Image (tube, rainbow, N blue to C red; front, side, top):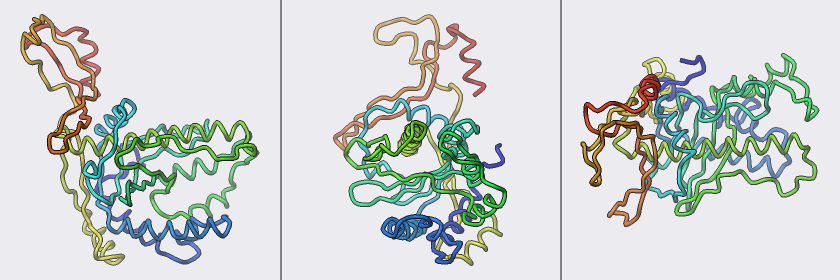
Length: 333
């Protein structure tokens, strides 16, 4: 497991310390860090955003998503058909969700596209959901410390990196914000600034890449929510260690100290075919059906909802498998 991986037992303490930081009005608190360097009007909005985020985090349920389920959510997310989100699709009105593996590409030092997104916080507000994406602090610092000659930015000095760590002491750092509407198709791509005349070609390219990563993370989040509502997923409550629980109680005794760990019920190819005949046809082989979306009608909603059909075997028992090398590859995932 990667050294940066946040597991379910760590998440309650990370949440508690993040709430504490966002409520700290001091020089090294979250409100100061979020509003630093902005004009007065923007700084005021950031100060309010820090306050709102702290309030939402206090009410948030905690979710840790297994690596296998994360990979399924990312893959299925890129194939997600047009879908209008409903309030009942969400597992909670407020949440902090962390994926065991990143939902976006890893930063390799060659492109200024930001650190990989590993988590999301959300809060239902009005006719939709406000979301924030998060990354590992150390990966964010690595990204920030690397200059970009195309944009005229030099590498940060060791002293500047130390200041950055002091300003952002928490395990995760906010990367971006977004909004997912209820009952309407989400605007997946981040809006381009109204005035792009001051942006260089490199900055425009970086903005485009960042927008694509934001879309990928939001798609993965929506699919994670949808998968959690299917029998394909199961969950268990993982408590924080006793020492962490005592630390959390000192920060805020009202905060939850358990995480809902979500994982797939299976991650191989367990399903069999429906027999030798299907729709009047006789089959003499078995084959792998790739994962795909299928619209399922829910009478209670009088509407369709997409459900993910995981990879499975189809065909009569005992029949030879077409392309067995492909099956071996799937079983080794």
